[in-house]
Image (cartoon, rainbow over the protein chains, first blue to last red):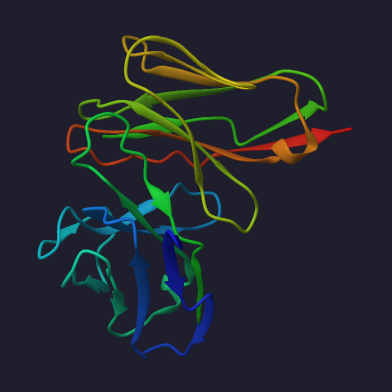
Length: 115
Length: 109
């Protein structure tokens, strides 16, 4: 199985442009997450979804939007990119309905540079 | 507020033992995770503690004291491939992970 995939691997984007980062998982996990990781800081949660059809805001949601039309896909959209959104973006998923350890599985990340 | 504190960087020698400490303050607590992250890669799960005490898994062990808001990750028989960042992440009352900035572990031969 592929697990969790992200696209693109990296991208350079002009400020003011929009972009959608894609995330797909084939583990049938109910919960999915988007994080950004910046040097010297911990992973920060942008948005999450506990189940298809629902989404929630994390710690740093401004400037980002998400949708969860089905179980497998959880795209992250930057409507009008700004240089402060330069970061590495990780998508993750977990089976939070399973009793016990509900570790999050991470995609390989998307490295985004906004100029 | 919620806060995670772990050392920024540690250095150890191949074959030795190293202990990475983590103190935390969270709104509620539903267990604590440790992840490993090699440079340029995604984090991968190492361990999970929800009760006080030591959990051993091969060369890696993780300890939790809920009353002290304290955990450590113990790595034995260090190998060069253990050079990575180690992320401490307690889970709060909303079942969200709160991530520390990570400890970069450098292994020297």
